[in-house]
Length: 173
Figure 1 (cartoon, rainbow, N blue to C red):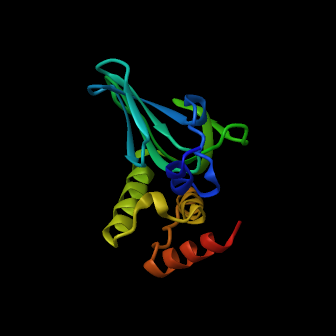
Figure 2: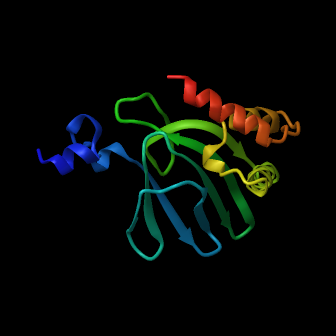
């Protein structure tokens, strides 16, 4: 090992590269006026274009993303849904989700356009106060899920809550 390598990596060892299996893969499809799957927020590591209608995004373990799915037929919308998911490490337990391989930790799962729209507005409000939605406390996404599921309004996410979450995350293992 050269001295340049030792100085770049604490402990002297270079970090392992993650194989493709270590990432969570999300397949996105877009067929005009029929199917639209998209990512509302999330920091993808890589994007692979499969064809003109389909592509795959890859996410590192621990990263959070919002996956929106919408479908219609000749009579109108038949499904709209948003899932906020945390990508899992290989070997970790996970929940299955269509188009997400292998799956992830589902922090929020909402169906029906009026509720999906409320989640999208909630995300917009969080971003308006200058907080990256990928950094929001997972407990807050669970709170939003629980409140909207029973037809109640979720509490707003505040800068103070976010700062407390960031401090707690630094001290917890």
